[in-house]
Image 1 (cartoon, rainbow, N blue to C red):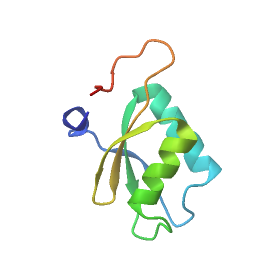
Image 2: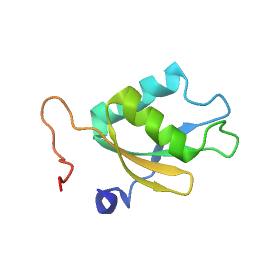
Image 3: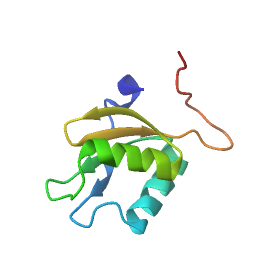
Image 4: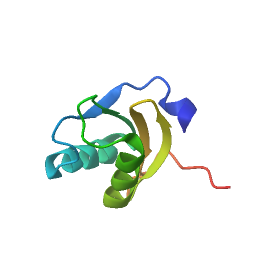
Length: 89
C-alpha cells in the first residue's frame, strides 16, 4: 500500500478545527472514490497523527497503512468494485 500511495498528493487536510463531521464526510467521499488516499495534518491541528489515525480508522472503518510525519495513508475497499486489496499476513 505504501508503494501505491507514494505518488499520491494529500486529498484532505485536517486543520485547526480537527476531525469534524465535515472532515469525516470529506474523507469518506474520498475513500469511496479512490480507496487509497493521503491525509495531511496541518501544524495547527489539535490532534497528533497517532490519535488521528486511530480516530479515522475507527470512524470510517478504514485501515491506516502508514504514518509518516504529519501525513497518513488511509485505505478502505469499496463495497462494490474494489480495485485494491490490503495484503493480509
